[in-house]
Image (cartoon, one colour):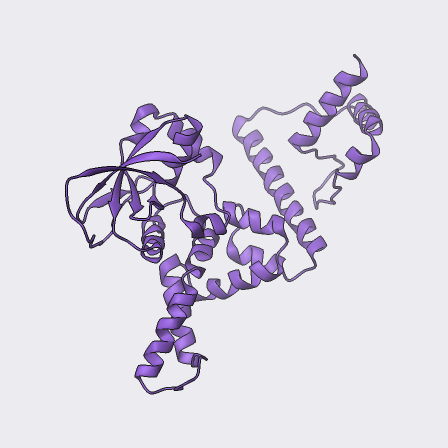
Length: 308
């Protein structure tokens, strides 16, 4: 579903991004006027290609603001692609809103993408990995400009291959656009070739950082998943321990009947459900069985069916 947007062409301005930080676009629109136009808007093609999405917690926080969530105008390019305001755009679709206030700039899709990245540098909406994915969409254009500069400078005439110095300049420019170090550009390219899809999703969401994902992808796809699950388990266990300490309320120790119940419920699951359960060995003291909340919910549902 596309949202009809009221857009007003305007001059240089300060616009707030989704995080509340304010960024100067430094834009120079071709048309400056006061006329209002009505048009459709949509996500930037590079945003869609990179399979990015607004986190659910971000939408929930924005929804709690009510109508105040839409006070800040969205920023769009003349083609109708969104530059700033993705969370508002998604929330408007969920709420079936028909119009959104927008400020339109006379930008190409490439200029719009650069402005999108610039506005997200101080925002928590996009992870470092997500920003690099977007910046990499600019690489063909940056390379072509570097080749043109080579030809003007008389280097490698007639060759389409970049010199080592020019290639470094392109990588540096991409790192600048994504606000990351140059090494992360190379790491993300390797991740896109070698990482398990689940690792890529964890990187997009910001669950894991680029360097951790890069280290994981040195292993086979199967071992990558095992390492990711172990990392998630450790994080979950650590969070639980911290919460227990903070509350200063000792939890009752599992009794034999609890373990017997667990064994009985696991035995009642069909082979398909059992096959989807991963078993990991965690380095921890004592004798204990750790369950994920998803598995507990499944076992509770199984128990209800058993005694109906």
